[in-house]
Image (cartoon, rainbow, N blue to C red; front, side, top):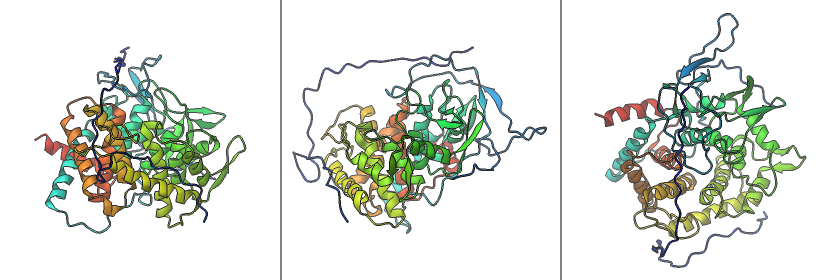
Length: 456
């Protein structure tokens, strides 16, 4: 049996920064105050009957004698190189990754057009600068797209962060063959010897810990951001589920005074705005309560500098606008909070176009590219999702886009950490989608073809 995981742990001891370069924002301010939260403002599902299909080709495989889906095994043939260095990812698992892994017939997901982010509907007459920017962005997206992650190397957490970039189009290598990453995870296939889901009393369970979800609700949030449909099938330990069952699990496990960031993203996406439910402790919940609980917690110090918490607020605001619903109460508080943080973030922008390497704490301009990919990637991803369409060509935005794209391109020969890389690529993919009409669910052939042209 081939051991497929070799873990290298490099410990960096920081002796402290002697000084920090201060860069003035557009307003030329030297003292910045983070936005504060304003006071409260007045004012059953059936499993899909779709046939199971190959994650990559979409072909169904049935045992002719029983009509039951066939699961077959394949051998890993790519040498393992572990570089999942995020603290929320797994160290070497106690269990060896088998030389063979079950492969599953899961249908390739389709992105929901209804839930697509707002785009520039009218065709833009692009300037030469914007045309060049579009081509550079698409070159970068294509380069990384055709270099997919391998299940022999990555944990479920690592694969989730590959999905965040390309959504339903995300390829994955399993046993030397390309499969769909979302299909692989939803059918609970092994990733570096770990499986993302479990069952308990016939219900789906989502473990939290190294290699699994780093936060409660994280996988559902990624499915929401990938616009996977509610009836998309899942299978765990031979039991059929759908995304709707995962929604019910996240509803049931809501807890006060806890991180609800990723639950907010997932539940505001899949539920109606006026949905009400009870957790498995009997507590009453609704979307406004999720928002209120999140607003009561700090941004700085939260996951990835607070960018995920801000994405939760932005996602709630986005869905409210998309549904043409009024902004009152907690919805209005979230909207005002997002708007104030957007302006604050731009005031921290560095002269080279990068965003603060100190997240929302203040100005920061740490020199190494890895840190800038991590911080500018996360911050720009949130900004591009949150900004109104008319602001996406603002020079402050295009400078950040150019910086991130150039940095990813210049470092393309290096092995980047999967988490920061995924969020940075998603920032570019969102920009391509909203400004240049890139279409999730239709990127696969286009990006593969573009990548082949880059190699000529």
